[in-house]
Length: 131
Image 1 (cartoon, rainbow, N blue to C red):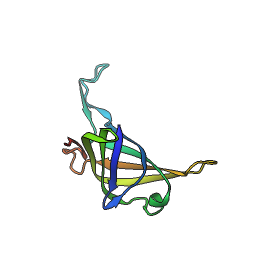
Image 2 (spheres, helix red, strand yellow; image 1 turned 60 degrees about the horizontal axis):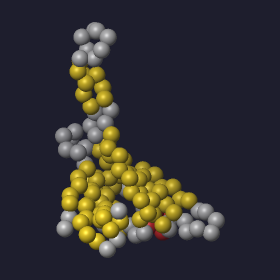
Image 3 (spheres, rainbow, N blue to C red; image 1 turned 90 degrees about the vertical axis):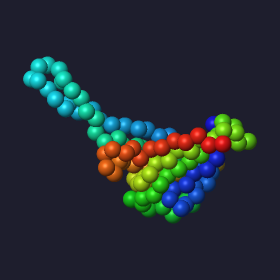
Image 4 (cartoon, rainbow, N blue to C red; image 1 turned 135 degrees about the vertical axis):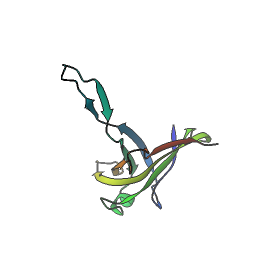
């Protein structure tokens, strides 16, 4: 896969190395009839966590923890283009910035974002196939 572009709000984020997205919800007992096992299980509102690793630290230095915006990225099957997919997290919040400096290598930044459903009904994650 080739990461074509990444944006956070109005900020383009250059030189992406990797993006990972994790969609989670916690299971909780909805009903129990005092037997050994739950008779019904519900899940909490979905929580989406994204991690973005980039080359260089200048963009990361310009972002603030707690900053909120839509995080979106486009990926394609090959570096020359082809069918692409756009993945978006609406209302993502920057929760962590980790900078790594290694001997004889370009510095990298690991940005962590979290997005939760505003109303509990709509998931903040979307994915669309492009042309």
